[in-house]
Image 1 (cartoon, rainbow, N blue to C red):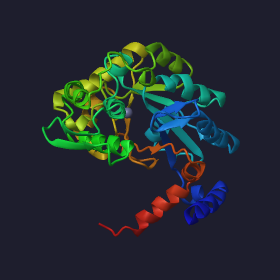
Image 2: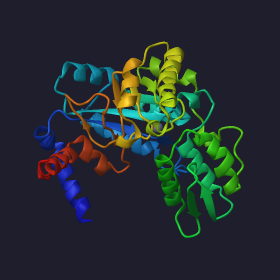
Image 3: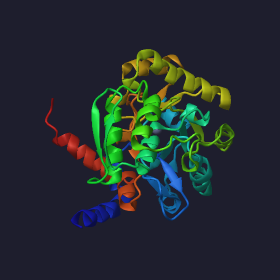
Image 4: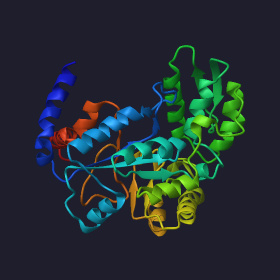
Length: 342
Ligand SMILES: [Zn+2]
C-alpha cells in the first residue's frame, strides 16, 4: 500500500521529466513475450492486448520517441548521448501472436518493434523447450513422481503440495543448470512418458510460431527481425560446436528467408550465466554487432554492445511508468552510489 502511494507520487514527479534529467542518456529496451486479445489468459506470462495498448497510448500521449534498432545502433556506434525520452521494444521467440496481435497493436500507433526468432521454431522443427515443460506439467497424470534429469539427478516433482506454476518455474530453473545438449530428446523420452502425457505430433495451436511469410511482412512494415538461435537451448550449457551451429545457422536462416544480413542477436533466456565470451566471439565472426541479454537495466552510450540489457514489459502501468519516466534509473543510480567501492 505504502509502496504504491510512493510509486504513484514518484510517477507524478517523473512525468515532469525530473528523473530523466537527473539520469540522462538512458533508454529502456522492453521485452515482451506473448500477447493475446482474449480476456482470460491461458498462458503464463501472456499480456492482454488492452494493457499493451494502454502502455503505448501513454507513450504516444506523452511524446516519447520509439527507437528503431537502426536508430539505437547508429547512436551507440557514434558514441552519441541517447535521447532520454525514448524507448525501444523487442519480442522474443517468434510465436504467431507476435505477428497477429503485437504487431497489429504497435501498428495502431505507428510504432515499430523488434522480433527475435528461434529459427528452428519457424522451420517447424521444434517448439521451445521451456513451453513444452509447462505444457507437459499442466497435463501431468501423476501428481507426485521422480523425474530423472538429463544429468541423471532426480527431481522430485510434487504437484499435490505445490502450485503448478511454481513447479514449472523450479523444473525450468533446474533444466537451465544442466547440459542442454540432449534436451529435446530428454523431453520426448523422459519428461512426457514419466508424466504420462502424450508428446504432441504437431505444435499445439496455442504454441504455434509465425510463418516466414509473416516475418517478411513484419520487416516490410519497418519492424526489425533478427535471430535468437535455432533451438532456444542455453548456449553456455552446450559443447562449443553446438553453440557455433546455434549462432551460425540461425543467422543464415534469417539471412536466407529475409534476404538481408542480420547484425543483431538475442541470447536465449539471456541471464549473464547463459552465454560467455566464446559466444560473443562467434557472433562477431558472423557479422553480429549488437546482442541483447535479459538483465534488467537501461541501455547507455559506451556500453558493451554484446551485453545490452532489457526490462521485461510490466503489466502494471505504475511499474511501466517508473521505468520510462526514469524513477527506476534514479533508484538504480542511488543503489550504485550506496555500493561500497570494490
Ligand atoms: Zn527466448
